[in-house]
Image (cartoon, rainbow, N blue to C red; front, side, top):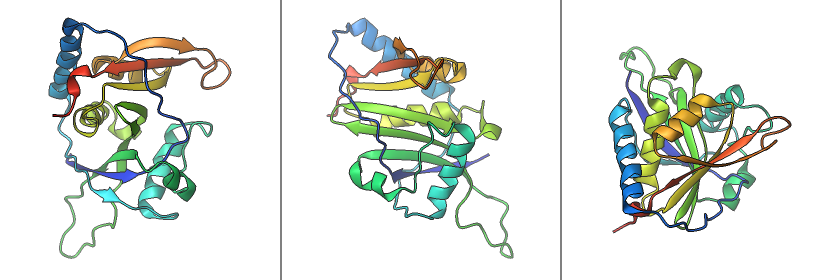
Length: 214
């Protein structure tokens, strides 16, 4: 099934903190790059573009993303992508999202204004460091490599010049942890009750010292 991808601006209230510099060997760096390339080769094709879309409260795109967000994450973790106060404060935060491309419309059938959103990645960049907040894939489209391709696309295309990408993930979300590890992220620490009582958070970091712009 063909898909297309666009990007919209958004703010999240979690800060993107710069990681302390750690020495890394050339061997380790090459190993990370090899894992990223392997992940790219394994990802199934998803057509991606970088079109910027302004969304206002009540805009169909924001509502479509909100709908998927609420279905996937508990209320304590869900963002409201139509909240204008969020948009104004940190315009450097982005959402890369994938939609199903309809191929069944005919001359007598009016195509929908906006195709269903099946996946999105939320991230913010500050200087040479980036924070990946979440990758979400609608349940019917999971296990097709879409999440992997979104992650690789963000790393390879949208975060050029970054030296590190960090994220937090619920320890019990094993599929997400496998995805991140497969793309070169390493687990650095675990924090008790990070997501709430009894829910441990794991901080993962991908170092991209060889990704500088130039």
